[in-house]
Length: 120
Image 1 (cartoon, rainbow, N blue to C red):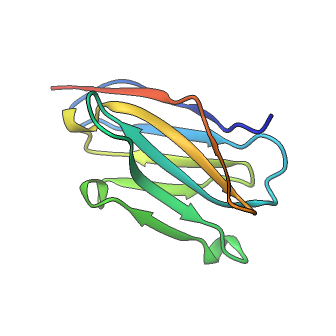
Image 2 (cartoon, rainbow, N blue to C red):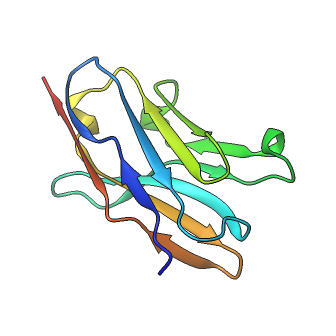
């Protein structure tokens, strides 16, 4: 079963940093993009950041939601892992963070999620 696995969540004080990782399972050749989403208490799931594969790693495109621009960075660590570096965290960033793979043919695979809690 293809399902990405998230790691790196936890509890951090406001102003702190966390780094989340998303590890792909199975073949990575069909992955078109990897996105990080989050769902806060009582909120809908929203896109945080996405990296879309280019011909080469240097051609990858990144997109960010406005609330995290300048604070979060999505990057490809290696062929199987995409990370989300989160800096200057605030209580508004508290959420369950999910990784989603979009593969050729439009297939989408979600991870189980990892909790991020930011205390004020």
